[in-house]
Image 1 (cartoon, rainbow, N blue to C red):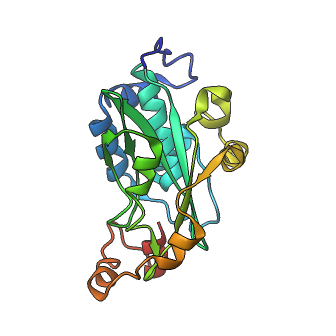
Image 2 (image 1 turned 30 degrees about the horizontal axis):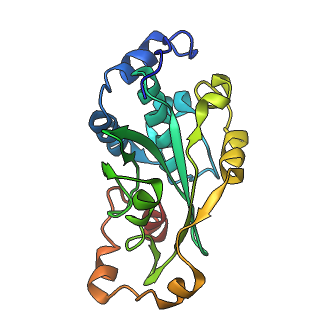
Length: 219
């Protein structure tokens, strides 16, 4: 769905911030940009930086990168949509959504090898979310259990997530509170096969190293 493109000034961005984001003309370019951002290991405590904060620090974790992706898509005339995925005893994962030819894709940042980009080939959000099931794990245990409705960031003032100089906790809390759907039943969850030794070795493959390797794998 194409929208009227907001201007850089309407979003409150500086010309330089706008120049960076406007060069990201396709989901593929946006994905590469967020991949190249260093992982935000939150060494100074929990963070939820705005688009401006990420561009300033050049670091991001999943939802911070999703803000960048959603804003870049919006500047290209697409809806700034996020999807939250919930896990049992594990961290949530947030992606930015886009559609091509009626099918969903996802722009996603993960320091880990698994939870990244999804090509726009999924007919529903459930199909998209289920594509992450096998790799979404805590050790050998597969943990993904739910996914949210599309979360449109246009419902928030841009000074809450685009140019906020503080952390965007209100937006993060609202994302947690939107309607979520169960992805698998409790019976199906009990039958999930643990990941094997080769897959567990692959868990050590990360893009950016942290002093704490457990932290590196978490993000």
